[in-house]
Length: 442
Image (cartoon, rainbow, N blue to C red; front, side, top):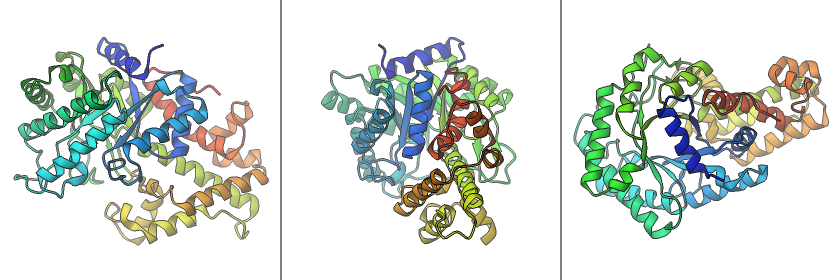
């Protein structure tokens, strides 16, 4: 039986050969969301690519408190819980480089980045995105322009050498990692609401990045590693802000999409594909943006489902009932008490920021779900809805898609199944767009 990496490489080869197949990368550490994603992949009989980012999981614990070894154990435990084969899990590292240490001089930042890459490879991550595109504190130059390709390539080579040496030291006898290079070079600060469009990477810039890094890697003797570079990250023209989505316009990326075929064994990886239409996702896959990243949309859907459940709880039990879960109230209090994850990202007056805390597409509230008080509130919500059966008419009002699924017997009205089904409305779109399935089977 083929393992996850082999199936992944087969998918890339098919995509280059004109077969509209791709793979979506799940970028989240939320256990409930991951469980729904595993169930989607299990129903599709396909692999699940799960990625952790350089600021989410690192040698110091990242913002999740997990080191690479912890995260690998964590996702394998969830896989085991749902009966998903471990050999079908493909762990990936995203933006591995000096990203989390940009405030440090380059020597110190790169020292941390090398340890980061070593730890990822040591623990069996098989898809490694090396991203050295960010300025460190002592790098000269205009911060509104990209770091010069030569510096990026030099640092990419240094990190790739660490990855290769780490595989030899810790993983000989296991599969070698594959690499992703490049970056989407986002607008500083992310998408702004007043923008009308996001400009795709030019074919010339994409080619320059690929050729500079290839020349540097092969010049450093990393010929075998270059053969395992399977994708480059570019900007296809997709992004999202608090209340705005920039949708894929394939005519603007036509030259870019064809450019990749000039390079053996490479496809594009597209980041920030959240909230695209299913048709747009399918077009991205057809245009050789073979790897589609999704993150905030998954936890956004999770939040939507929990808010819908709480609205039903209040209708069933009465808004003045002292035994309500008060999930939203608890969440708001946590975000006000510890504003570090949202304060510098959400602009506007008091009312506008309050709205964004709950409903922004950026979904900064995803950082708060692991808190103990939120866990208790969620469990109380589930308990209340299990004790007080959800009327079918109320389910139709607040979760109409799940109402029909309950009616046809594909799911039950248990709150956990309702939440998972809503998350799978997102993963199902990606699965179909990537040619992996037509529907979630229960």
